[in-house]
Image (cartoon, rainbow, N blue to C red; front, side):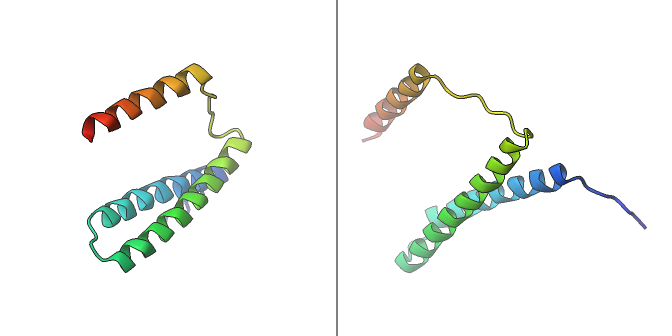
Amino acid sequence: MNNAVFSEREIINDVLSSEKQMITAYGTYLAESTCENLRSELMKIINDKQQIQYQVFDLMRQKGWYQVKNANMNDVQNATQKFQGMQQQMQ
């Protein structure tokens, strides 16, 4: 008999990981779906899952369990320009 006790941090980290995996899976289903009603429902589910994921992430951040570094404005602008350029090349 295994009496493993998980800490709050371990449980919440597992929840965060699970939410990320579900978002990825639903994104794949959405990308492969041709039924407009199904696509609409999948987009709603993805949006709900993203909200849950953010709430879990924010809880971890508030507790000091998920360290984040704020990006400086130059990095944000450089990334935006890079991906806009990539998008234009694909059109």
